[in-house]
Picture 1: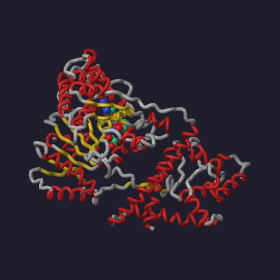
Picture 2: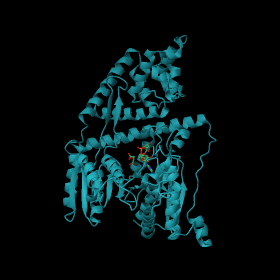
Picture 3: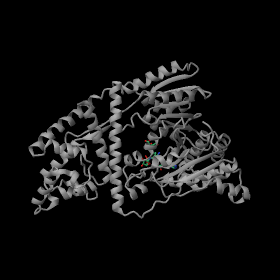
Picture 4: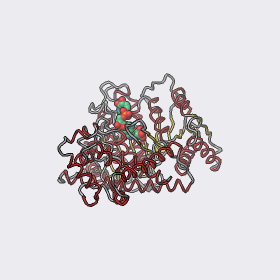
Length: 568
Ligand SMILES: NC(=O)c1ccc[n+]([C@@H]2O[C@H](COP(=O)([O-])OP(=O)(O)OC[C@H]3O[C@@H](n4cnc5c(N)ncnc54)[C@H](O)[C@@H]3O)[C@@H](O)[C@H]2O)c1
Ligand SMILES: O=C(O)C[C@@H](O)C(=O)O
């Protein structure tokens, strides 16, 4: 890693306590920049947050990738407000996108018993290990879907995906990290007794890579994840570097810090080691809605994440000073300084963060800085707040969102098709369940076509429907078959519209698709036909309370459709 002259940092506070700890993280980074003459430039963004979602119907703007690509790193708070936006929507719409699309395939998470923090364990010993978590694939795959939702035949599938590239690169990273440490000990988290395909593969690759790379100097062992979690509580001091798949790494990197007293101190680097994309630094914890607004969130995870960022870019002195400041302040303690999760009484986010900031500066308060230093802060560490214009009318925004979601869908289908073709090329077979699900979709497709034919919808009409994007304002694109549905509607005009809608649709007046459907469909029979048409193109309408959920379901059905196309 070449240390840049100036570090351009995109700052994303996100949600909940992310917004509370971020200011303290920034103050400590600025203090380190000041002390060590580093040029840090911060630009703050309001997206990747549930507030942004509420305003825009999406977690991030369309151009997020190109916007953030211009930065060296992303400094991230936390995301998620489950009472407002479902967690899978907020996380998959932001943080998990960063990890995947910026290929941040290493999640690096230190667990260390810091001075002054009581461990919940009676005999914790010297806890000091790193969790290396695979960060882009594994159990966190978006391959899968739901079909026959709400019926007895309901099927829900999510595949674990392990690629050789993905597995090898994280194992190699962990092997090298272990080699660089005095204990030279690597532990692999497996579950090859129960998860009988991917986990034995993970074990095989570790064996092969450690032999190929000549890692004879390392002690390498593996534990099934169940007993590994037990060992992490019983004797955490035995670990040095622990490598795990996406899910196992996620769990271990909460358990480890919990053994050191609180998850509030744990940091995390989401690293793209090649530096092709920005890496992301964040605390391990989430948005903690239960303490949000109380001002008592522990800022150490956020500050330590900033320290990791400086370390990553080779600013060793500044990084060391930040770490020492954290340790010194915690060692000195003071229940009026440290936050309640570490046993403090009146300590707050502000009191603890400010104490660390002050320690980094070596006791100097910012107000006492000389002119050169103050001007350095102003010029080298500054914020540019992005402001989104609210001038656009809501209808333009809705159309814009629809267009973007169509584009995203098309991109997703395309990328899935590519991926499935790649699996085919490699001779990877779909699991039995997936094959069965795909077969059912294919059989249904045949049945739907027959049914539509019985209702006088010709194959040409179906093909034209499949070719055109869904656009309620484009009557021509809808073709004559939908016009027939519309005339059916008029015949039923005397009956109350709501009578003919399924119950869940009646309660879903917010959904754009449902609103459109409500105007067009007025009988169960026609509703069914309409759904069949959508199912044919993989766009099953599943009315729910939120328009976004409709889109998500479309994605998952699309995935199944692509696989069924490949298999048949
Ligand atoms: N990286 C992320 O952005 C991230 C990580 C985990 C969870 N989440 C999201 O955060 C939301 C809440 O998730 P959760 O409750 O499972 O996990 P969480 O980490 O937000 O909170 C778990 C518990 O730890 C406490 N806690 C967490 N951070 C703390 C801190 N800095 N100081 C003091 N106490 C702290 C909380 O009060 C809570 O009791 C969800 O929406 C979830 O999806 C986001
Ligand atoms: O990766 C996740 O699942 C979110 C959160 O648990 C995390 O560890 O960042």
